[in-house]
Length: 446
Image (cartoon, rainbow, N blue to C red; front, side, top):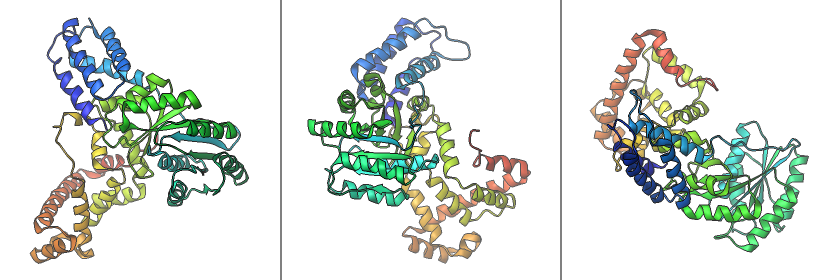
């Protein structure tokens, strides 16, 4: 997410390091580069110009404290301006005082709108809500079937009325929700390949019929400046309450995220970070600004860990670690827990300083798949007592996992190193090991 933008900004900031004071001369050159980087990221040119002007107005003449450098100071100023540009605070979903609350979802075809409906339903279920999905996209082939499949996958009911028009489906879905104790109705409306009058009239009619408490516009972040133009067209017709940026895990350059709030005046409420139904994050301007500037996003990383790590398993593992009983079975279990958090590249992207890595640095996601295949090719005795794995066993494991003996040897060496580290920690007593494991079991709100 924003890797290219982050690296380019890091290169720009390096030029200010070592200066004793921010002056009009050194800031002018830096901000010219910042403006160029923003335009390369497909940020609206008016937004980029205003952003640079605001940063320059704040930066020129500021004294550099002994504890920081000009580079650090300009990063702080740009961070503050990015947060202001992105919306200063996270925007909540609004709910009606009398259920069901209707959430109308609109956007172009191919933006990930239907998938977002399912993601939102799962997200709201986790918040204690009981959503109903309404299949009101009657124009795209298989749109209804796709929503039904997603609903079945996450255990959320889908209201379907084949042959009816979109307004009738949406209105009847609300009645169905009211009769079946469903407190939220998420209406998936039809999209088109481009903005057209027929689509706008239909979305307007659905909105008029069900009076949604919340109208969300879904846009593909990879469309860059076109995303902003489409958002403006939708906002002029249906006056949506918030935007959703999908496919943020792809080649999104950041322009849509940085331009949308400034051009339509409505907050971004969610970002989609993958294809799976749990790959949805609430939009936090300060966290995104931190990622863009290479400062990481530890808060989101911890939240992901809290959501996905099984505290009971963590407690069992803690006890085994204290007794120096860490086995390949434990290692496999922890590997699976980490993979639940999403692609490793995304997890690493939340760590500070990742934008300083070379541009061609890649994360071999396949390495984790190979490790899992190797461990699964072992017998139970081999997993629990790795010391018995001799040369012939390693050859058999390699053949069974579709890897090489060298891959198996590499894993065994890494595991031996890990075991030694675990023994060192366990010698430190219950306090040291407890502090280590509590990192995996932080209570909510800590």
